[in-house]
Image (cartoon, rainbow, N blue to C red; front, side):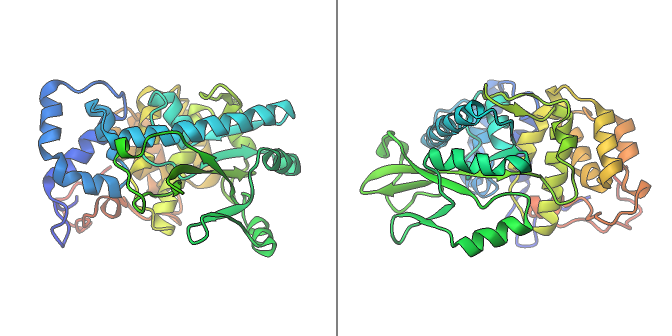
Length: 360
């Protein structure tokens, strides 16, 4: 049970109703009827800033079919990122390197007709750990560097070698690789003024540039064997490389999101937009999901958000699956509860209220 407003009163009930409707749309992405579009549009001016904060304003633009400047900007930035990514993919393939694309890039291409879900800050790629040297060579050859964009100097600035070594020794991914790529779109038509741009868009001497950033993983978490993800891989929706099976994407993306909300303070709602199409339309083997939950202790990390997304998709997650994932069947070490209050800026109801639903 959750209250309808935050203590500050910043989130009225119509905000919640709107964002839930937009998230529910993600499941099958069917065109809204005229009355629904009219209802959404009537309230959108006040609600749009919060949708932007939660990184789901694209769901309004895409579901309402309005060709607004903000969505056109997102799409054009993604087109530059995608084109650059595909060049890298071609070079990796030429070197007989196996790689897996996942998360935002795969989701946008497969489920949203290559429309961007906001500003993608980076693209995630998984490769085998023993191939890292070859992958680095390919990226350097494509003009990428382990660098960050420094707005004070208007250029990419290489990371210190000690910083890179420290990051890579303690993590399952390399320090990010970046490249500045020119963009040819017209800024005034997209309502972008110098000084208002956000990563990955920068403006240098009046010219738009995109900081294309690649996150190169050799794992996805410290305690997960990547071989469990790459089994039953499928061709990537981008036409090059591979991606994880729908079942493996489901448990990986959901459990990572739950943990990032709990530990790293993530408050974006966009990850639901990645997973909801899998639940509603994906080729799922729930035994694979349950096997991963048992092996890696993911019951709590999956149960709460799958329950919520089943609510949004009219029961697309089987009740037997939710029953098997119930947190009280495990040790609850990483059970942080629903965590929906954090995401929607609400306050969870008192759990011992005998009149409140248990959510079971």
